[in-house]
Amino acid sequence: MTDEFDSLDPNVRWIVTEARRPVPVDAAARARVIDAIKAEPVPSRGLGLVTWLSEPHRLALPPFATAALAAGLVGIGVLGGLAINRDGRSAAGQLPAVAVGQPQLPDSLSPRAVKFVLIAPQATNVSLVGDFNGWDSGATPMKTSGGTWTVFVPLHPGLHTYSFVVDGTHFVSDPTAPIAPDDGFGHRSSVVLVRKPSL
Amino acid sequence: MRAIALLAVATSVSFAQDARERATDPLGRLDPSTRFAVEMLMDSARLVGLPHGPLESKALEGISKRASGRDILVAVRRVYRALREARMALGPSATTDELTAATGALRVGIPASELSRLAATRTGKPLTVPLVVLADLVTRGVPRDTASVTIFQLFQRGAADDDFLGLWRSVERDIVSGTDPGVALLNRAREIPTKGTSSAVPPASGVRPDDAKS
Image (cartoon, rainbow over all chains, first blue to last red; front, side, top):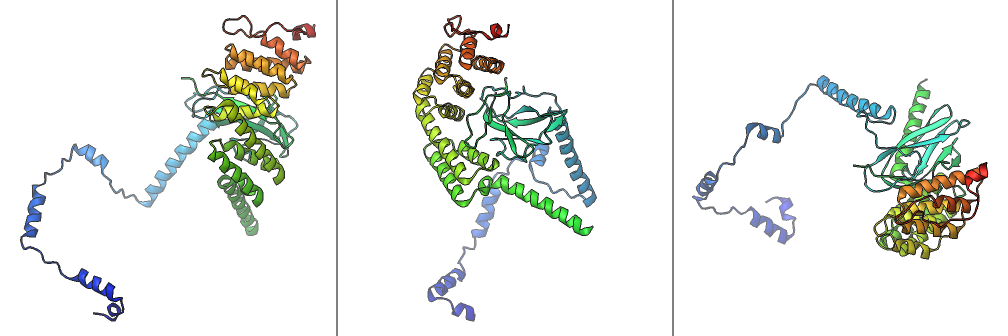
């Protein structure tokens, strides 16, 4: 016994001693265990392809191939995003009906692209704020074409309150949408109701 | 050159970090005491089964509009009280959207008793659109009583959400054209056919917008 063992609490020493004591084993025990294992039916391996597909496999690629694969996946994601964002429509061409600040029914949970428009030819920048982006004026900038500022935003069906921020400081309500009552901060916001997609 | 590049990188990292912090801790820009009070209100709302989202949203709106902590807290408390009152008026089955719309109606002075009457006749129809339209019309100058009676009658007689939205658009146009808001509402409400009647509202006195323009 080592000095370290001797320094242990007497109760702990007793436990360790007992744990280290060899357990007497029946000489035939090993044979019984082996026989029991052999008696178990071999599990069916099923169809070879199904089994192969369901089992994990290690795939080893050289670094160059790995980088090329990763770049390809990123490219697919970028192209998909560009296809969706180019004109607010998905590449598949199917866009749920947009509401230009028009109230609609709330029902399901799937977000729908809603178009927001503000005509402000004198503005240098306009952004959209509302309960859907934490009222963060940096979250949803709008794009202008001849003084007409536009943005598409995916919104979950339901009631949303929003406002436009012109030139970073002026909060402007949507003249085409119902007014939300006084916000408590001296401004007026607007309300949009997003319908669920019709089936 | 290297210093400029480093500065640009540091600035972009700082902006990105700021955006991440806003995303992960949106109330972080509140002063500690206001934040504590707002979060207490949100917790209270959760405890009594009220939606806490509108409370947080109101606080974030105040941050965005650079309101003081005191004003933000006043606004959030107002929303909390309105939600509680709306829940009592509309009942436990009211959705979050209905509660939010009802707070708008309460905010413009529609009595809770009127909301209760509306809820009592709903028969499964959502109240969100009628309440939003009601609050908007009162905000635009339609007398409270006229607006609530008209909307209530339309709802009771089966007007659909599209009817209410069309009504709102028409009345809004008429008001912008110079028609008295109350008269505009009554005139346009007469045009809405509802179940079992040719019009939902009895004929009203006043000048129609088309007559006023000629």
